[in-house]
Length: 153
Image (cartoon, rainbow, N blue to C red; front, side, top):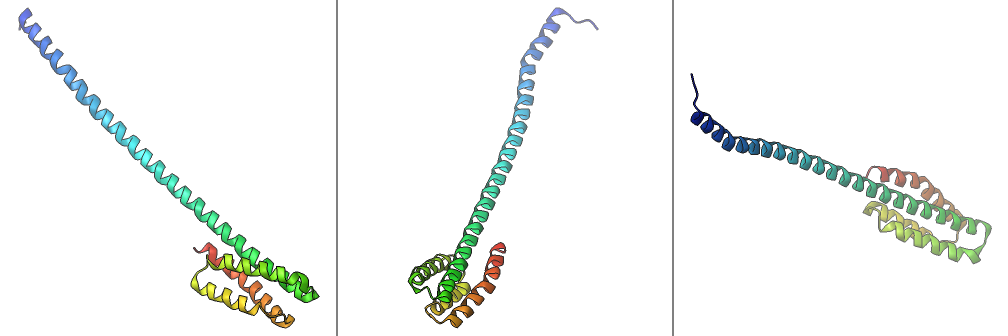
């Protein structure tokens, strides 16, 4: 079969017209798939970053709550120490510190523990050493439970 120059020219012309269209379609498909993967990757990274930030906030919140509980227990023990040695001059400041730490802790605790804090605050108004000993014993025994409950939130 012989091809004349006219037929060859027609074939070349058709190829010249169709070839860029085919290349453009293949390129668009490839670009679409590439962009889709890039989008999915960015979405995954964003989700991981959000989870990390939430985890970081949870840890900071837990650490703040631990600090509040620690301050509360320390101020209660400090008040008891002043009662024990009869240092009523410093007791007023220690009781104010105890009430302040209790109020800071109160607002971040669930209702059940808030009731316990109120009970302790009421008991803290006594100057009786034995009542304070009972109060301090109760606070010191409940503090680990409060700290443990933080980890389950």
